Amino acid sequence: MVKKVFVSGLVGAVVLLVWTFVLNGIFGFNARLSMKQVPDEREVYNVLRATITEPGRYLCNPALTSDGRFPGNEPVFGIQYSGFGHEAAGLGVISGLLQFLVVPLIGAWMLSITSEQFRSRFLNRALFFAVIGFLLAVTGDLNSFGIGASPLTVALIFAARTIVTWTILGLVIAALMRPVRQTRPAR
Picture 1 (spheres, rainbow, N blue to C red):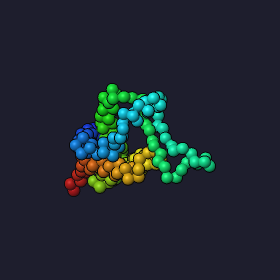
Picture 2 (cartoon, helix red, strand yellow):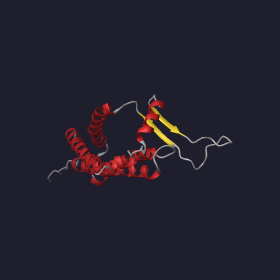
Picture 3 (cartoon, rainbow, N blue to C red):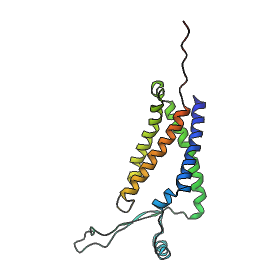
Picture 4 (cartoon, helix red, strand yellow):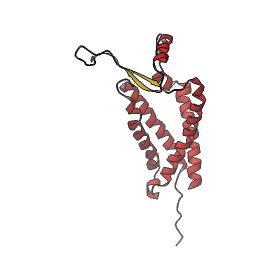
């Protein structure tokens, strides 16, 4: 079983890498939804650079009304600063590659410790990963919706991407982690 887990996890990592490259590298999925260009970027950048010096997530609210409340129809802007510049992009790539390797291996291992009866059906093995994707989408992607964050449509699209990604990963690992057929002794 250890060999199946390892091989399934490695093949899953390759599939995950290829899927992500096609989705983001070729079709620009992530860039189109979460990396939009700011008009007058230089001016905005200079104001942010002078104002925001500590890493963190910031909100920029409209001025309070005369009765001390935020106006209901004015935008709220979210600003995120990690503390890194473009020199850290290489670390991000290495971190992403490690995640692409480790996550499918952990998923394959988690599947391997389920009951034989559960693992005996392809659909169960595949749905195991789809459910993980659903849980990650609900607890991760949908949490990005809110004031100063992503619009609901973007959060839902990212959640759908997470579910589809984990389902594809599940189909691959489910196909590779077929149970060993038990032969019945001759009578």
